[in-house]
Length: 464
Image (cartoon, rainbow, N blue to C red; front, side):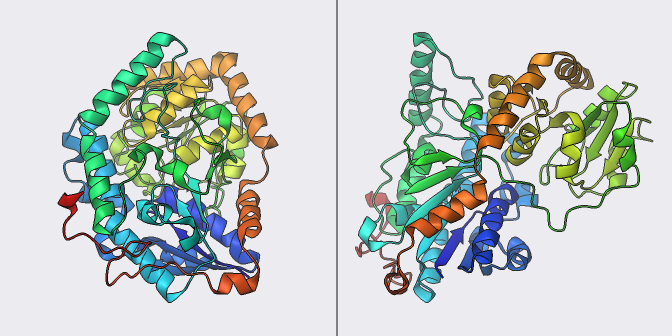
């Protein structure tokens, strides 16, 4: 039996894959601990995991990010992205890492698996390899790795294939790094200095390459080719839907087998505080179309949609808070989504072409990748008009190239080994014999705030 520590930011799309992996490890007899937000403690314990909640100072509520980021909606997209990175990932690094040290001091681990957005694992990755356990990574968002072959992450630009596009990529990257995104590098190194760690040898967007092995939860065909991509990043495909227990089928479920094509609409499980962003425009745009429009509110009461719509819903609309995706997606002719990475992966794993309205976080990057792969339409906004949604849905239903491309991705994903089993097998390949495992402990002193190699924390971050 190995002792495995999982680390995750308290965001549903980040922590849920870690719980899924942890459940499989626990089922194989390993002792698995998860350090994440208290909101997910019950779900983790039900999966057989031991839970250590993050300190309150870095345990934000992913359903109320606007409270954590009050100026988020008042900024340009670049400024909003910078704020998201700083407040959700970089500034929590110090308290996250100290929490990791506290957990490992109390219970040494044989192996650590860090979700790639948990930057509190970075000082551990920068430690001498002989002084720490193996550290694997799980990438739950589009790859952000810097490359001359693609535009900087967050730009929402598709990669080019010409010398001009490569020059464009270099110039944009330089301008962003030395301009509006410079504060990210400054804060990242200051946070590392605060725990006695050296400056990061790569940019914020390349930290995913520092893990001993990173499992990227997608297929390579949905990611931009990069000549610089390290072989430590392994594409393992998407995880299956993991709502436990699975949602029940609503009374109108038999209608899905009828003659009308089924179009599923979702704003995900978190970005649904304003149903007027995507669901209402889609319902308006597809009213009267010869389709069955199936909506999930992501946990919002069904009546909220009628209120947001301003009256009774069109006759071709069916609504539920949640639906069993393994049963729904094989019946869907298309999916309209806000670009949540997990949901997009599930749709493509079932060969469903997509209409993507990605407006914030990594969602514009998801939308661009879907269009680049030929598997759907990028609406280039998080608040499309009903007319634009209707035109895009008609396109993906009528033009066969979208379904052909989505079907190709489905077949490619189906050829990949089970991603959970792949991670579990790698864990069991890396852990040593029991006598060796019992003696392995992270040399961190969270009280003295020492770095993994034992040097004292500098008196202030300004010295870096």
